Length: 432
Image (cartoon, rainbow, N blue to C red; front, top):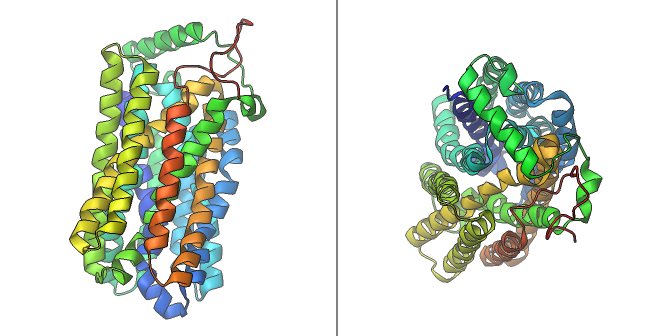
């Protein structure tokens, strides 16, 4: 049997990695951009948040388009669009123009994660989706890790943050052509899927649909609003991104201004911290699927793993507040990212709750909720740092986001399909 589905997810890992290198480029170059544009922490927070306003606003439309037209077209268009926006941002003459470029980047990047959630539902079996979800989402910490090294390396090579942005954008646009050649919307349409793999996936889908009494029809987003698990999914991702995006956007400045790191040290420290997140995410997905393969039920596995991870995140962030040393900060933040990224398993949740029919729009709704943190957190941290002159309040903000995430992962029912069923039997444990 061919393993085209796993090669497909390897490509998605690469695309999400580049996605996060490009979106994180502003944070890495901020010490130079702040000086060149003459902006303070409050304006910096607004500039960091512009991307997330646009990105969040496009999540549900992107999810609907993915369910309607398929992930292949949307992923290709996204790569071309966000590569162009990254390159154009390097030419920005002032803060306002940079903000427009960042908004365009947010619009263009919006389809990537919901499209990955859709492909998770279509190309993987139920027992493979934990690994698929974390392979997809692991691009976030991997891109954040390499982003510091890649962007600082490009700045050093070109002598300018502007040319670094242009080079990164052109490389991304080239990936768009590869994505068009390598991705298909279904296993049946993919030339790399042989008969054995196609039959294996078709049989798994039939068994899954029969077990969940699936109708094969799209229900639309409104159907899911009355279920507790839908809101737990959204709030869990909101809390998760409150921590992750906070560290992604403000982490380099925190290391520079609070710990005295220079540009080179920031790059390698970011690599260590977010690299730990990549390792943690891959291990978390493997562990979840292996436990389910051994017969453990989905809810105990997911709630135990993610609940434990949430407690570790909270403890690590409190430790950064209490232990001020720079080496301790790197070690503790690496621990935080290692366990935080276990919650990347959430990218299997849209397929669990909505099946193949509604995985796109549910992934968009989940990512919309998560990216509310994306545009609130940079502004909130900027206001906190500007008002207090330090980062202790910002770290406590991250602790609160970690608490919300932990409660949500323990409330969510990971075993029940919320999509309409062909019989009138009630759906267990999901109604709000």
